[in-house]
Length: 454
Ligand code: GDP
Ligand code: IMO
Ligand code: MG
Image (cartoon, protein in one colour):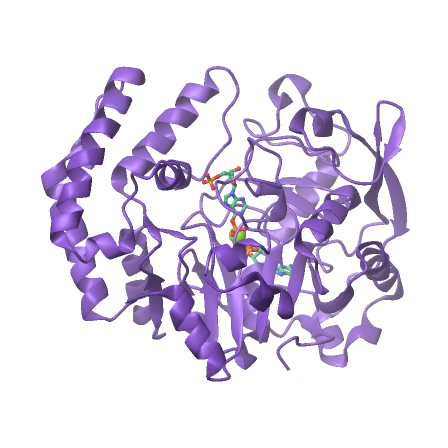
């Protein structure tokens, strides 16, 4: 069977940790979208791994697959594999021949467009990894795929077509001087060598065929979503989104397995007990703000809840895994989660960071929105209307900071009563059972109510 792990909010909900938590019962862990914009943390016996491309199952020695829906920067992939080897792991990663390749000029163009947009305050606040420009080239039918790296003639031909176009775009449209990132000969040499390494290690596969064979053999497969529903290109708050589909449907198109296989398994929504956001765009339940990311924040000055936001940010270590940027912080947003539950069809939930909220007198949730005098329970389809939404808060009594490792050991009923009331509210509103509760970053600091693979 399959289990799909999906970020229900804006990324960084703790997906990597949940993949690791249940990963022992999995045989294969496959990513289906995104690239090295992801930063997934796994903490095993106090040792922290931050993974951007290698699927999180690697920490438990599981086979990893980067599906066709991913965009792969071979340079960061090999660096990450080598780094993990040095740390004593032995990652076995297969890459879809149909996955698209991030080239150095994609990163340059990502930066150029963000800079251009920033002149009119329209920047997305991307991770700068070239994600958007690579998916653009995929849709524009001028992208390079992993299979092209294995065929030097095709590689050269495609570079010769696309690179001069990109160079003209950078120089003539944006007026930026270009460098070696646009040099066909050196790109050809570097990417041909990546192709050789992929071939030598038998890493390039037809992902759909590979995964279907593993399922036929009785293997358990986990799909590890990156990013989150609210930064999905279709279901997120466009244009403040990433350029792929983190939602559950992406697990089918991004691996080559049928929707029936994905839907026949479990789809687990990963929920952070509050909200964080890296980058720009609205956030109706935002508590404080981050200069440069929170829209209009520079002029707004400090909000009433600034101290609380700072407290949660520090307690939760809410700084971007990839870029180190401070994350914006807000209360849980139920209209957002209802939208997410509908788009993904969650069969279960993992709610993380319950420990981070401990010690607060009260914990709030945006239960619905007021939009032009009307109470609404899910998100409007446009980012402009979402910006106009004022949350109607529901208040929960806080819970004490306790020995979370002990609670994790004892199980669900040992979770403080007020925290359980909070969890049950979330479960009821989303009509999905709680499968796991995160009480700390470590694998052992989690209450497992149900392992969907067992
Ligand atoms: P991902 O991108 O969804 O995999 O999440 P990240 O790894 O970017 O961010 C989640 C952060 O929270 C990481 O530092 C995790 O180690 C940490 N984390 C995950 N679950 C919990 C939890 O229940 N409590 C606490 N305190 N930290 C957690
Ligand atoms: P994980 O998998 C949180 C955000 C960026 C930016 C927007 C577009 O760790 O949850 P991109 O570089 O993808 O074009 O940036 O999406 N973003 C993430 N935010 N977690 C992530 O991944 C993210 N990946 C991209 O901050 O706002
Ligand atoms: Mg992350």
